[in-house]
Image (cartoon, rainbow, N blue to C red; front, top):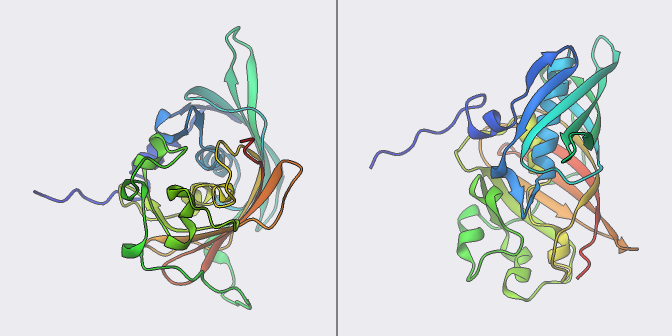
Length: 281
């Protein structure tokens, strides 16, 4: 049987499903795909990538450097409108904001997510690196576990798992067999199921694609994102990404998730911090 060709950046399911269409200056039409849902809600990283594309089109610089999103109401599959505003443009950086709206049953618009982003040119960055950060210690990808490896479906899994290639480090999958470690850690290999290599927009998805750290804390259920800030540090090399997520503090019903994303060249390509509501179970 012939092997399916690897999807290319710009011609993949992810690209098609995050595409936006310019209606008029600052206004874009979009369609939220049911293929990127968690239970019934659309994944926050997928939404961030879609709004990231709209801002990349609206601003004179195309590459996201820092994107902060506030999730106001849960998004659902179907049509949406994205409205963008250019806040400032400069020689090396530009800043803009975008909001995604959907429609209530009475036809009124409901704002789902609001984003503020600063964009630039990743290819123009200096190669001067001074860091104490090191790639996460993880088992080889062939020794890690995906949704199909468990005795039962992973709690909370849904359509999005068919579009991702995620292999979790064995030390962070105790929750899947009823034995969570009690540590707020999640680590895994990340890619798109069709083989498309990573780019800055898919990094916006990667930081919010692994199971929540709350699972390893012994909590089950939906962990909705309140706010997510992502920093894109450089353009990723081809190959699978390694994602490490840590929670140090769950208090008052909220937790933070700090994510580091490393590429196949051992470079830290993205970082994020997320505030989420802890599951109520």
